Amino acid sequence: MAGDRAMWTALVAVEQERARLRAEFWRHAERRAATLARAIDDGGWDRSVALEFLAGFPDDVPELLDRLIPLSISHGWAGAVRAALTVPYRMGDLPGLDRDVLARLDAADDDEFRRLAELLDHLRAWTALAELVERAAGSPDPNIRAVADDF
Image (tube, rainbow, N blue to C red):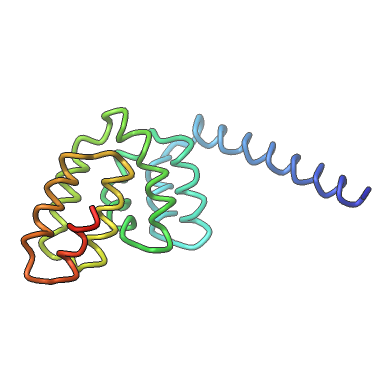
């Protein structure tokens, strides 16, 4: 029992330090967006921490949109990307997102159609989602048409 409490106390201390470092990076980094872009590109833990940082401090999301939309179709990263995009999208800070997502449909397979539909649904981007559904419904690919049925 005492060991559990000690582990918990250590975990709380680490989380407090983590919060302090995130705030310090947000306030004082000279090239914050460039650093985050590099972390996203590097993948692994760097990408994970960058996406989590962006979900809490979304100021740099508009500048990183060209990296985030392609990641939104990744099964492993889709949830973290959606979390990073939600606040800035709903605040109106990502006016190009709908256009950029829809531009990807010309070369998208059924899985990409579905991931992009899920992204638009999550963001409540109803107009763009309606266009995606219309395009999916008109596809010759039955798997893409299934996306229209689901949304």
